[in-house]
Image (tube, rainbow, N blue to C red; front, side, top):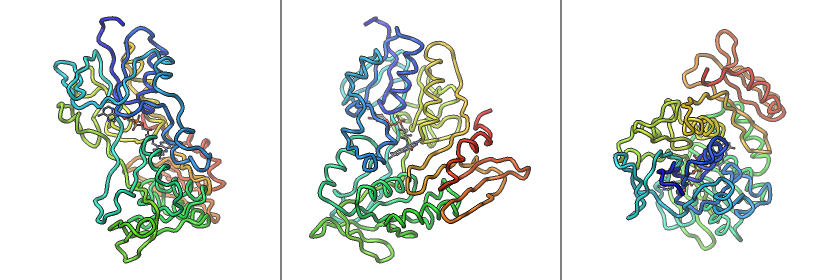
Amino acid sequence: MSEQAPIVIVGTGLSGYSLAREFRKLNRDVPVVLVTADDGISYSKPMLSTGFTRNKDADGLAQADPDTMAEQLGVEIRPWSVVTGIDTEARELRLGDRSLRYGKLVLAWGADVIRLSLAGNGLDRVFSINDLMDYRAFRKTLAGGKRIAIMGAGLIGCEFANDLRNGGYEVDVIAPDTALMPSLLPEPAAAAVQQELEALGVRFHLGTVVTSVNHAEQGVTVALDNGEQLAADLVVSAVGLRPRTELARAAGLETARGICVNRALETSAPDVYALGDCAEVDGQVLLYVLPLMACARALAKTLAGERTEVAYGTMPVMVKTPCCPTAVCPPPVGADGSWQIERDGSHVKALFLSAAGETLGFAVTGRFAMEKQALAREVPPIHD
Ligand code: FAD
């Protein structure tokens, strides 16, 4: 390998691997090193909430091991390597008592799951699923169990509810809000998804929270704030994610909700970039695949010598609840306008219209979900 300090990418999730792939399309020579805290196996994270529907366990969802990825991409990959600090003056990463010099550094280290502080002695049965290793542990512990309680009725909670029902499990969903996916869907669309999930057999306990999880003779007892007690074998916590900012902040990088970067994905430190779930791009934290792919393409060009700003188009999100196909393109935060709703049972077409009649966002369920592509073309891109 040449003496040139490498481009170091921290993280081998979709952001890290997509960036490496895009960069190698433009440059085969500059050394690239990927370091990751996990096993470095390549997988598509959105597939984690489809395992039962597709009849795939963790091994079935794995796409390639790190040796295969290293060979395919012409990069070095260091699994099980936890970054513990960044020295932007010395251009070095700290990995415990080791260090690694970088020419350019890319932070693609994702987001942490939010963990609720719950009472009880059964917290070893509470699982968060935010990567393939979590999923493997969850499936292993689930073996033999039949009853799952899910905390959270956001996109991930609802997707797991549908998938686990498809796998034949009994599913209870507990959430403080009174509607599903409140940050994504207008109420009629949320009600449609709830109706179809209930028809599938999912039981909802909305407007309340889990207070404790205790071991019972079989599995655990999940106590709710409203006085209900549920029997479960496992609890899945799907209450949200928080971009990983701590190490970046400690290194003096500007952070807010995420690691602050401009549209060229540049942090406040020279030659340090960020993308994916850890990044706040020009004020926006979008924990989805489409934005990170757009960032990977732009940043690859920048790293190859042509400084390029990312331009987000429209970013529709498909909710993987096959019992009620759903697509949503939320209107910009604070946009002026109102929802116009067409509803036929659980088939809902909700358009967020400006005063001038322009479509600024939409949510479609059931048979209207087929219109998502046409509607996405009507919505103005996030960046001009
Ligand atoms: P991650 O995949 O989290 O990767 C982070 C990497 O950084 C890992 O390799 C980790 O080991 C490493 N790392 C972290 N800390 C350190 C450290 N200190 N040192 C070294 N390495 C470190 N989005 C959609 O658009 N559509 C969907 O349908 C969809 N479905 C989803 C379903 C589920 C169940 C989940 C959990 C998410 C879903 N998402 C979906 C979101 C999408 O998957 C994520 O936005 C995306 O995968 C994030 O990729 P990432 O590479 O930024 O982060």
